[in-house]
Length: 441
Image (cartoon, rainbow, N blue to C red; front, side, top):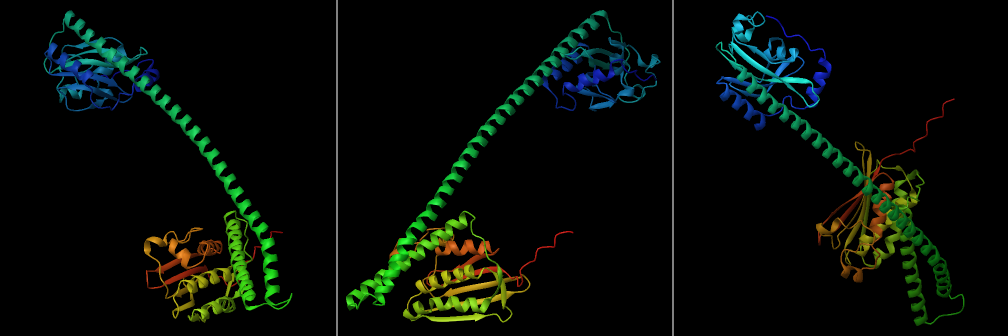
């Protein structure tokens, strides 16, 4: 057996073959139609459109043969491609090139072969259109002409495949370019929108900060004058005047607390608050927070309870902000608990998780599950009727959540209508501030 030689332009030929992008693709009717026609026209059991690859011949279309490919070294078609002209073998057993070929001595028992080379769009030989028989036979001049005609049709199909591939590639490239333009335009739109949002947020924060400062100055004067009047610095007051001054002072203090909440929240949103972290006495902070709500709790005849885990003594936190968290939660507990009810503060440490839990609980009106998601958003009042019955801005719990997050913690809630609420602030259990590593010498 003689193995087929390599064409002189083998690298370029292989490049042209692979540019067709037909290898290992599904069957196509345009090529199957040709092999069916060749099989009937030449009364041959096998007809193939063969693409000769580097080390195999792969059948783009096959009639009468089950295998999709065979090795190139035993390929008849590779001889036709190497010669660059049609190849006709009337009796393979009598041809020294093929007599010992395993496809002659074994399945599919080739005795007759006629193949016409196929050129790709660039003129390189990429394969053949061939017919095969299991008995010797002659192949006339007319037969050769008919095979050449079918091969020309196959070559046109190859050209159309290349044209379709190029058109698809061009369409894909155009689509990619259009998509890239759209992404670029959308990105520019989003950047502009983000810039506008950032500017709006900055202006909002500046407005809130300026408004708070502008309101605080005259308000402090009003509070100072009302306190002076309450102390009768300018002379004695009648009972009616005393009640009026007390109302002015109470309203002023409420307004000042609201302004302070707005200012704090705007600073947090603008990332302008820096915590002053230091080791604090947890018990002292809790007791100080409870003292601030004791009077209002007593006025409503509420029972106040509190307990401290003996293991929790110190904690690294911002003492003023932690007190602000606890006072906000305790004040809410007082506000939403009916007279004669109970409120409390529990502090528990979790050594395993390195977390301290501050839980403020009450036996108040409770909160419906569907309303709990909105509870920590700024300026949210869950029910307008509550706004009328219980004064408030809807900022307190938003501040609690933000301040807890600044400490590296968070807030959770357990509540149901009529069964009270349990707000738990979880903060990292760090007892000593972390020291910065010394700079290398």
